[in-house]
Amino acid sequence: MARWLPALATILCLTTTAFAEVNGFAEPEEASLTLVKPRPRGLERLAGLWGRRRGALERGDGEAVARITEEAAVLRRELGVQRLDAIGYALVREAQGAIAEGKVALASARLDAADGMAPGLPEIAETRAALASAESAFALHRVALFKVDGMRRQLGDFERRMLIYSDGILTALILGAVLGLLFLLAQLARYGLNLYQDLGQTFPSVMRVLLLAALGIAALLPIFYGFGPFLLVAPVLVALWSYQNLSERLVSVAVTLALGVLPWMLRAGDRLSDAGTGLEQAIHSLSINPYDARAEAKVEAAAAADEGDWYARAVLGLALKRQGRLREAAQLLTDAARTADDDRAAAAIWTNLGNTWFGLGRPQAAQEALEQATRLDRRSAIAWFNLHRLHLRRRQKPEAEAALGKATALDTTRVSEWAADDDAGLNRYVVDAPLPDRFLVGRAFDRLLEPSSFAHRVWRDLAGPLPELAAPAAGGAALLAFAFLFGIRRRMRLSWPCTRCGQRADVPLAQGHPEQPVCTQCDAIFVRNVPTDRRSRFEKESQVERFQGLVRWGRRLSAVALPGLGDLVRGRAARGLLLAGFAGWLGLRVLIPRGVLMTPYAPPAEPSTWLWLGVGLAGLLWLWTIVQAFRPQGGR
Image (cartoon, rainbow, N blue to C red):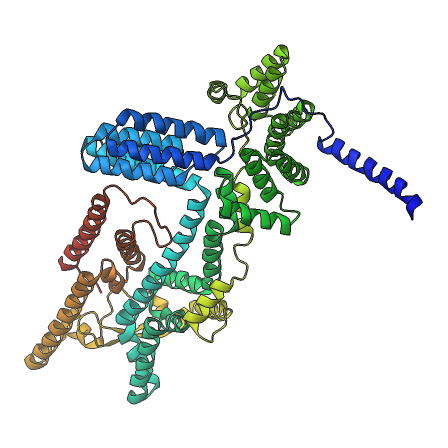
């Protein structure tokens, strides 16, 4: 065995040397090129600066506060932290306090400082809108611009975007369930008399009452038992289909389709919420703050569990590079660059790997990595600018000027910003390439409709023993029934309440949907003026007056109860649902301004303004529907 040891040692040595040459480790380090690594205990230094700033605030020393805030911003850039949300939120709260006290200049300075510590934080733009409103009550255009900027920042932030998507699905489920139930109740109120009269031809009077009671109970079951019994909406809508007009039928189809896809909507909401709070969010958090220990542990575990997860490895490697752990970062970035399946993402990874080799003092490996990045993404100026810095550091002026010229041609504005920082620190002298978060979005949407334990548990709580497939089965059966009834509509003869007295009027559907059905007696007395005795005419007129009063006050009370409900009862289903849906959305926004899932660290500076705006819009909408209901209108 001993005689084989030298041979094994030689093979091991050659293998190690080859691996090192491939990965850039064989190149000797040049101490003169090595960039300054981040100093240890950087976050503790930042916390110390923040403590000194708090003391200066208490003393009222404004100059010291401004100086220490600028030092903290410089230290943030040195550490490679893209955004410090905690400090950004603290500065936003200080700005909100200054706005409340009428100190406009101080609030503006605090918001500028917040932009320096947490660039891109949505709450900064929202507080700037409040500041613009405080400066001038007529600066509506500036308020609108800042509000739009705040929405743009929210959609640009991966975590907020995923939670907004998930919150939108959850809000749609809540509003959809309420609107569907309102539509069903309005349809029963509108066509219940039709159904009652037609059932009277087929069943005895007692059985007819029992069937109507069963329909009423089925319609009310969702209030007590959730979405499972709500599937009974499908057969109820099938029973009412033949009476409905075009608008109501379209809404019936939409409600049935929504019921059919309900389990998948629950899954999508859960998956997007998980992306906004789980592994994908940890990857995003680590990309903007490399010192987030919790996110680093989660991403490191994911990268170790899945060797093909190049995105997690790239983000982890960039975080370690920003921390100054360059050798570990180089290995991770090398693996990620070789396995990335997108040229632009691979170019960003090669750029960061080149910066890592540059920081280690290995110029040849850095140059090769940066040149590979320029070949993969010819539209990015970052790799060319970093090549300019590398050549400049090596005193290769012609090559440095050529690289700078190519970078400037691609993005003049940003190159001038990068060139303004000449500090030789690892995270300031070179520019790290951000990894596009569209891959994170793609990861979330790839699993959008996969089974989810949370969604299954919610379905079980709402639907009881019914399986998830009951929803598409019920929806599909209802749609087939709709198609069948639509096909035989011209051969059907249905009962219709007389628009004058409410008595039965037989109408063949071959003539189309009746607008003003009139019973035989009303037609004879009021339309054709057939002679009749005075007592019979008086009784009929009294009956008509009672029925018309009941219908009129029913419409008015429904309009008072909820915007849009009156239109639903009158048969204008699309308009009624739009009004009711808008009123419900305003109500949710008033009660939960940030949505169901969003928990802001810094509340809006003036919540009462937007609260009263929402209340005012809802009140105007309500008043308008009431006025419309009390105006004299004809028709059913």
